[in-house]
Amino acid sequence: MDVSIIIPWKGEEDYLNVTLESLYNTKNTMDFEVVIVSNFNIEESHKILDLNKERNVHIRMVSANNLSIGQARNLGAACARGDYLFFGDDHLVFTDYSLDNLVINLQLSGGNCITPAIEDTYTGMVGYGGTFNKHLDYLWHSKPLLPTEEVLLAPGYGILMKKSFFQEFKGFNENFMKCGVEDYEFSLRLWFFGYKLVVDSETILKHSSITSNLYKVSHSELIYNYLVLSYLLFDEDSLSRVLEIFRTNYHFNNALSLLMERSSLIEDRKNNLHYKTVEDKKLFDKFSI
Image 1 (spheres, one colour):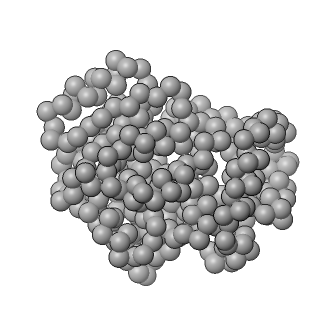
Image 2: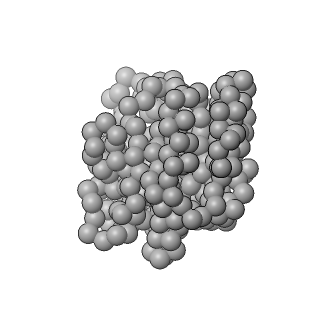
């Protein structure tokens, strides 16, 4: 098997069917399977399989029990049979030869991970990977000059890498709550550990950005996730700056309390600082943050 497409699923059947339909109807020379990690009820999960059993695509449903999206991605990767992993979601529309192109361009670029360009289905705008501003807001890049170019951040619903690399890299950190920011941490950790992330500007996937909050992420949990990212990866100076960004937020104290309760973060930070080869300032200067 060449590629495993891993899709965490929370029950939006119509969107998932559109994603699967796009896979059936697009051309790719590589063999692929779809691993759906279902955080939904068993009956609905089986209905998806029944609706698609006549299709000429390998689909497997993995049952999850109230996992965060990062945990769901890790579970899907553990079950995957492909040499390459593509992490997507149920709001993607695939295009002809998108899997082929991503694998080939990853090999040609010398990168460790690659992200496609993402076209918003509602606005028609296309983003080419992303970066942070000084307030940690995500900003999409405009089209680069080169077909593949280094980029700081990739969305968790559009990133491909070799399975062997994902295993060596230890996957997505599982200290994040529900959904959000875990993909930023993954991208930043790549760079801090000396690896490279590139965007394939010629391969464009469509994505529906208007979604319901199925994971029911609260404001406190979202701020907690940003604090987790910062604690896991940043030096003391950068961490202090992040605390100043969020300190005046009404939900900050609650988020900080949640952080203090998570003792596993201490060992993760220690390990990350041990393997970190790139200083904060050097990385931030590289991407003009």
